[in-house]
Figure 1 (tube, helix red, strand yellow):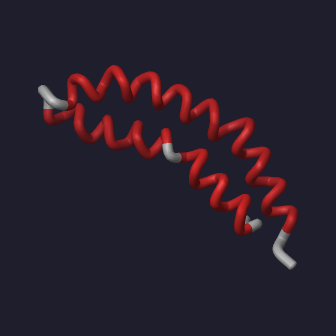
Figure 2 (tube, rainbow, N blue to C red; figure 1 turned 90 degrees about the horizontal axis):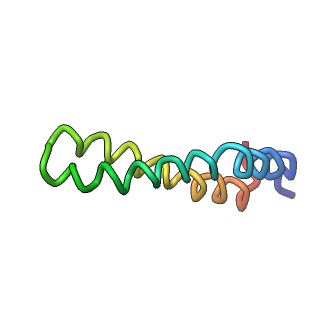
Amino acid sequence: MANICGGIVWFLILITVAFPIAGICAFFYILVYCFAQICSGCQSFSDILEKGMQLPGYAVTKIKNCEF
């Protein structure tokens, strides 16, 4: 039996942390991505924002596996 408490904790993290962070990162990613094509310094910041947008996917994987 998988650790159900781990799934519950990650569900709470998904709702309270991951979705808001992903929304903020998505907004700024759209703005910064346009400049990343012009300015090479913006590319690394764009990559960080993309990782932030993928945070809900990471949390859902943890929920599926019921991991801590």
